[in-house]
Structures are given as C-alpha cells and as structure tokens.
Image (cartoon, rainbow, N blue to C red; front, side, top):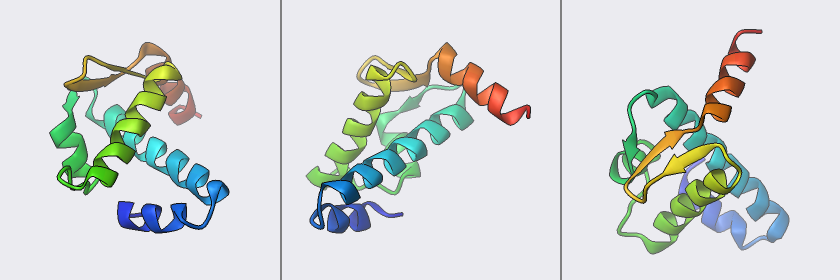
Amino acid sequence: MRLCDIRRRRRLGSAASMTDARELQRRVLRLVLEAHPLALDFDTLASRLSVELADLGEALAMTTAVRDLVLAGLLRSDGLRVLPTRAALTFAHLKLSR
C-alpha cells in the first residue's frame, strides 16, 4: 500500500487510519529486520518505503511508525538510524523457524 493511499483512507475515518498505521509499522519493521545487522538511516528507510521525505505528510507517517515501534520496544533509534531490538529479532526468529 502506498502512502498516498494511506492518506486518502485516513480521511475516511479513524478505523481506516488505525489499519493504515499498523500496516506501515509492519512494513517498517519488516524492512529493518531484513536489513539487520545493518542499521537503516531514515533516508534509506524512506527510499525503501517509497516515501517522499519532502512530503510532510508522508515523512510524518513514517517517523510516527518508527516512534510507535520504538515505544513498543521493537525498534531502537538514535534519531538518525533504526535497528531492531533483541525482542524483535527473537520474535522474528521464532516466527520464521516454525
């Protein structure tokens, strides 16, 4: 799902925007896990998500997704780079090894 679609659906109501936010979080987490052990900087993350950082709405959606994942304990960020936490890596390993 592209970010322009997410913005369009946000206008439809909070249930749609909550679903879109979670989808973006899933995409961010998946990309960060795939890049591990390398840290992704925000420019690289935006590029892989097809986010136009010049578009304030898209940049805000991406940074909000990263912030929410940091608060949930799944990502670490120093403000420049993003890495998965040990908890996220362990969960991904357990899920993939089924």
